[in-house]
Length: 342
Image (cartoon, rainbow, N blue to C red; front, side):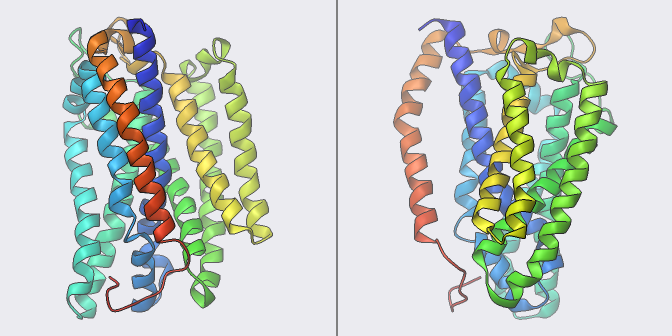
């Protein structure tokens, strides 16, 4: 297998890992974003946390695997991204740690004030992490200032432009919708019924953010659709994405929550696919000079490294998929509070 083909395969595998993370940890983050707003008492907040309790850490394995795969397959892109977004990554790490600590610490003390603090910490960490993911994707679309060595030459404030922040808001509303649907699937009774207006609110907020972001992208980020001429599959994915979005309110109206959740997952997968089509062949786009773009073919490791990694991935990925399937099967069904619950 030639080097260029190997580089493209690893680009596709990174997209698969990113989509897997966004779908799986997306509902975790969405539950966290909505946590203090939808749950009205301590039992409901415990139900909310226990809905994702057995799953969230396994879901984050996809993010760790994505980072490791980028480091090994495209080390120059990894260096550019992690050096350029260093402050943002520190904030992201803080947000993800605060989520984990909140889940584990909340139930250790019976004090309402103690639990209220960790409830808001859980929500703030989930919201901040989601916003930062969206801002990173927005910057990847519009590009960042790079020098000839691929080093970021701007500042943190340069990364907080209107478009990246808009994409961040899109991710917040998308994950809130995804999380509300998952939480409705895992609960029942009065709590589940009270989730229904929140599902609609999150969906309408997402739809508004989706329309505004799409219009902004089409008008002011022309390179986002430039690859559609070379890859017509991008236009097909865009149409299917819109149909999946339209299917969510249809399913909610008919109380088909599983179908609504699957549609939400397909929306996320479709947006990741469109992101990949828009970005290709770049991994990091230079906003100041296209000659400084970090592409698959300037950042990829040697053919031997990519081949060895592909063999390791072929052996390891079935274990990751198998573990994920077993965990979701073991903890299927509605959440019940017991003495061992959070």
